[in-house]
Length: 627
Image (cartoon, rainbow, N blue to C red; front, top):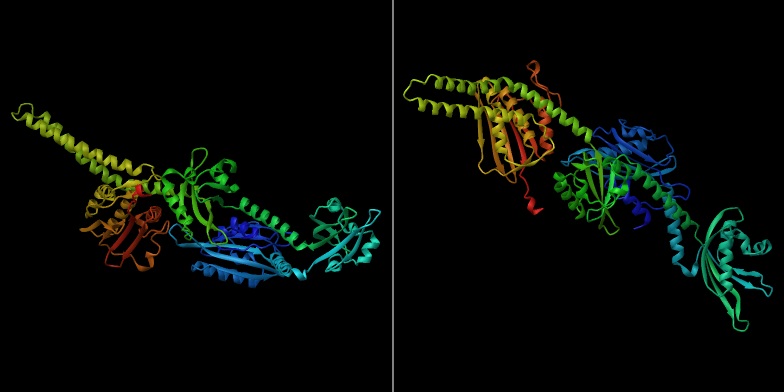
């Protein structure tokens, strides 16, 4: 692998999960490049550029259509078509020209944590200088293979005169083409040393001293041609000794024009610096891990996100910067990538920040490969979504509190019943003083009081658990217990609507890794919606079934169903079909988000006049002992 290819793989092109070649560019400027992400409407969501383009690159391109950034109709149309293909699941790589410049464009689909395409990743690079240098190097390599017909190389002989002066005897090959001087002109100027660039003359003098001392010598220096152009030569010299005079009498050598190579090396250094800047200044946090999961390098955005310096992060292992409960899922993705499989959809997980807080990141991992296709290391790209997560949790809490308000009247009624039983039991004991079976009355009253108090406690406990803020904690739990709790909380609401609430639970359901509060919120919301939609004297069924590696929960009502033109919108935030009856329009949207964060799915089957079934499928908890 060339130095440029490795540089490219270490940086932005591999963040797009596409293969990219980075041959040399011109010696005066590194390649200009830009990277962006777009949503499904082809509007820019993140944008970064490095280097100069022959058109104005907007400082803030966010919310612009991607084709509006590029001035050429052909270039814009090609990029727009590539985004259309990426949104259909196809990665496009193509070359396009504008203003006598050649660009390589990569556009690939961007996927969310479920593997669904939610936008595109794009990368554009100026290949003009690169292609020129490639062509120069190819010509150079062809010349070097023909040793007997060396091109851009000349041989020479220099003789040591009796007085100690050096005389250039003869030259061959491309001496005139390289230096633009004839041999006679060089002799007139005072010898070959006059060709050497003033800054490099000490190198040439040392070379001559080494040759006169009897040592072969190789060195590189610049010359100034007749037209004033600077060129690089690699000089190979070998002394010739005279057996009688016992010293060096002349030396032979060849001088190879290595200007193209030197320009390419300089271009590569500048290219690596450009890509280093793109890596360091990119908007996404980036970290490079070795195959053992040790952090080798991070960019500024990643260090800022974690609240540490790059030096503090170097040498840290992946499992030490990921929050404990998320280590298993994050390491599973890492091992998948190390094994050489394609990048998995991004996951959302928490990272440990230096101040002890947790930061949410949307993480994508990509393998970086060598020239043989083997995985060398892993590039992790992390988008800071902490603020979004806090906003989502605030919405969930708002919806839970709204649900509590809906439950309040029914809960008051539920508590009044056992309180009334307690009061009656106390009165019975008070009136039993003169009765023969007083002890029996007292025992019965005590049992009634205990049962009623326990019932009140269960009701209060359910409400406290439902309202408690535990949005980030997950543990293996029993979904049947969640279903029973949700049924109890919705019971009074159903009874006021004259709806029968039925549980239909499989035995021996596998455990689910879940946040019990959030799953209770989902169940209560689905039950409320089903009860709201049901006519009096009908039933709502909450059914749990074990399926292959998962648990399926169905909430079934016998209501009027949902019109076909509304089904596609029921999970949209603030969309409600209740009209004047109220409703925040957040319940199903929040339920949808909770289920997705539990790696589950939620589907609706409804036909007007035939009721509705909402189905939630959640994966069974893995056996962590096998991880």
